[in-house]
Image 1 (spheres, rainbow, N blue to C red):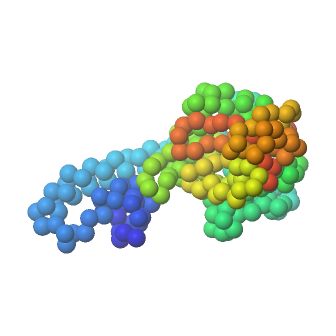
Image 2 (cartoon, rainbow, N blue to C red):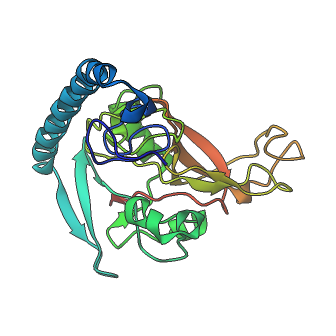
Image 3 (spheres, one colour):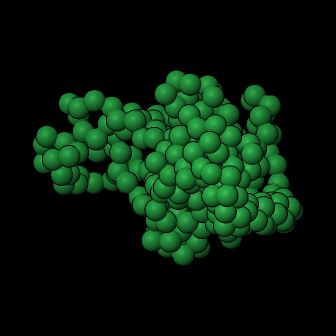
Length: 266
């Protein structure tokens, strides 16, 4: 772990500063440079980045103030948790992942992840997790949202939160959050096909949300999905998924996978 960042004086990180995003080159130990070279480095590298970072922070503050006027809130009577909600087109969505404990599980069983990403659910639990007056969105409802945001190739960028999408190696996939949906990469647990172990989809890099829609007909699946050429459709349901790139895509997944839940109002 590197010591205090030269730019913001706060963040730490193995390769980039967790606070301001300055690359690992910013964590230069002063003892490695002559006083003259250190001053040149500060003047030409650190100060310009610090100026950009502060301007970005001010821009984000103004954006948050403007967006705050568009949000409403909803309190889940079952546990008293309050959620931000946002109207996008004619739909009203929760602007946060669901955290109702009904078979839900923390990413890697660590409660610390739950504070930011909330809970992950199997499909059967996701179907009954939304509070009264809300429901798990169907493919048609997801598609309406995605089309409004420009289609599958670019909607991910517009629906993602403006921070939080970062690979440990430094790659950023943050969005512009044009609509206040504030999608966060809560990760998940995914089994590609029967007979192999469960794969962890890294929180911070992947966001996967269940759909209420089921597979309605027999489909051909690749070997990566199943050892057989056809799969029992009763095992499958749809999810909508984002990664560090700007797209969002619809996937068929086994119902026992663990993904996030966003509720939409009835």
